Image: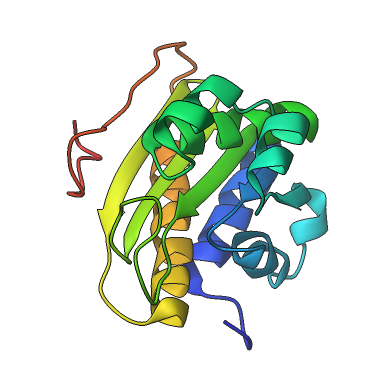
Length: 180
């Protein structure tokens, strides 16, 4: 993901700047790629508060407030952990929006989940929303596609933000339900 910023990152930074809002990331699977993509956009310093790479479960729990009981019972690859990462990023980085990524990039399975199983979450003024993805490709491809998916979700949310406090989650499928 080196080179010029992708259109989704450019659109997200522009929308955040226009709204006077900020963003923070908590990344496991993507290892900082989401934040790196955002800061590749000129002017991102006005909106990007920072990013936390929380690769080890202890970091997720201790730094970002992921529930240790959920990690012990269900592991780190699930919608709840993605949501708590996003909320933790928002809280710890004092940002309007928080993004969370977790999953299995591969090449093999982890925590009983096949490679390509990904959970992304966006937390903002209107609550938190997560989505499960089932991505094909090698490790690098899964990670890059995850970045594009979460930025697309955030861009969508920025356009739909109505200031309500409802909390939504799509834990069932990997489909694009942004119209739900």
